[in-house]
Image (cartoon, rainbow, N blue to C red; front, side):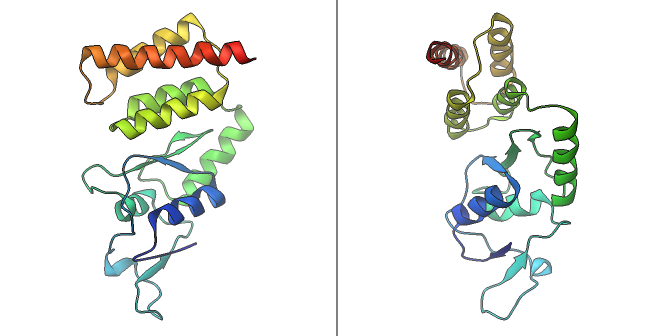
Length: 180
């Protein structure tokens, strides 16, 4: 996969999802940011390009796709959860293979991890959509875990907003249970 300056970020993220089943949370730029000359591998065009290889770190991809270098996007996978920015593609694929062999995806823990990592309101919307599509059944223990995850998240919410967010998630859980 090649990434060139000026590419649409949504295309880069779509390719990542297609090739590696990697999603993202956080705010992205519209177009790929200029990146350091040390990353440039192909200068045949007037645009700087580099190829995502097995040793490419997710932090590098996040840096050129994020709106802010101070709050880069985070990459996620349904099985692995939130990917460490220091992981290379090779390390991620190893973790994915290891977890697929050892245990099935735990959707509840993924939702809790996403909530804990949420920093923007777009992340909240994404968590709600994941929950809606997950078909997780409502359980008292999970509802309490959701409350704890929301309380510990770094979202810029006051107490009332956190309670409202929790209520929205619980409502979605109950709605999922009725459709089965």
